[in-house]
Amino acid sequence: MTTFRNFIAGEWVAPSTGEYFDNVNPADARDVVGRFPKSTRADVDRAVESAWRGFAVWSRTPAPARGDVLRRVGDLLAARKEELAALMTREMGKPLQETRGDVQEGIDTAYYAATEGRRLFGHVVPSELRNKWAMTYRRPIGVCGLITPFNFPLAIPTWKAFPALLCGNAVILKPAEDVPHTATVLVEVLLEAGLPPEVIQLVHGMGETVGAALVEHPRVPVVSFTGSTETGSIVGQECGRRHKRLSLEMGGKNAQIVLDDADLDLALEGVLWGAFGTTGQRCTATSRLIVQAGVHDRFVAMLEARAKALRLGDGRQAGTDVGPLIHAASREKVESYVGVGAEQGAELVTGGRRAEGAGLEHGFFFEPTIFTGVTGGSRLDQEEIFGPVLSVIRVADADEAFRVNNGVKYGLSSSLYTRDLNVAFRAMQELDNGITYVNAPTIGAEAHLPFGGVKETGNGHREGGWEVYEFYSETKVCYVDYSGTLQRAQIDNY
Image (cartoon, rainbow, N blue to C red):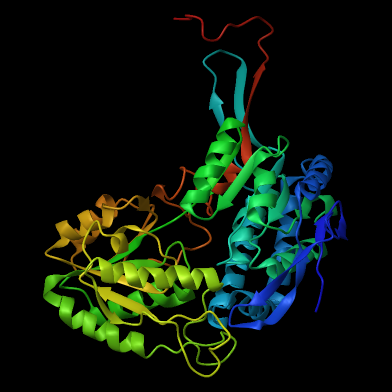
């Protein structure tokens, strides 16, 4: 068994406690990927001190040169794509076709960040006074604490780290304890690409210890967190008290709407991918299916047949459609919602059990599960499950579908299948989500567009695209008065 280390102060080091935790393959818990540091606040303190030294060097490196480093990161990720996909599937569980996409997201994010090294635009605007120049530019902030989840072991850390680095900040990465190996390899790639060692710190450990230490540390002015709404609320309170810049990407209860005029074959492919891809462990997963009454029964029958045919197994094996849940506690949570559905009068159409069979007995597998007869306001309609459970809600028309979609506390992603252009444009305006897809599933964000949600899904910031570069940098306003006289702005000059 391999023992891994933190990366702090330019070196691979053991945790201050000397304690470690096992990282296991969720498809076969007997397979231990490695032992990883169980770090403490002392390790975070060392990382913060080092990161500020790295910031002093990196922040003075021209932004185009920072972009050159990230371009090399993209090249290295592309060269190691298959290797990275395989190790991600081993420690996280989703099939290779998905982990290859995870790596590609990191590649795309690296190349996009590289171009932004020459596009950190400010503004030059007219002054209200004569012989005076007024302009803005973007400058780095300092040390950024990044707390990332398990479901996209490479993509989400790159969404956060690459823009932060491009803007000239130093980064401390605290990955989910379920996927520490991928984060370790990502740091190795960054170093190989030429990133100065103290600019990146990697501190493994538990969220309640290492994550909390990052959030509470007085010398970490920027925090970016992806995780549950409940934990995000705690992070928000702590960062608010300390006046930190904070980006929260939290839960979702996303719905795919299928209207009577939809292409049902296309909608079927969409909901299968949206609900059961990544075993439902996406913040954008299709957790609700809102179907108009005219096609409800036919569409549910189509869906049931296809869901039963999905093949569960180790994601590294050819033909696997659905991998395991991330750990035993996640499977128990999903299992508990089967009881919730029964208690609240929903009808279990298929699934609802731990998956059995050869090759599944040592993993955290759960059958793709579909409930019909789910009512608006019920727990299956309202609560994020984060597993392969789909709740089907029958509606009379588009108006009711839109109301049901909007009737939850989350607002990340939504999807509408229709041939009616007018309804499609109404959906883009009226569905209360950060992202709306028309004739596509609730998942499928692209690296060059902003990603995030409204209501209790986020706090107004976005990952990805051009907006994230504003989060990781400050606006500096500069004036140059070359008039040779005292000119007083904000005085009545008229």
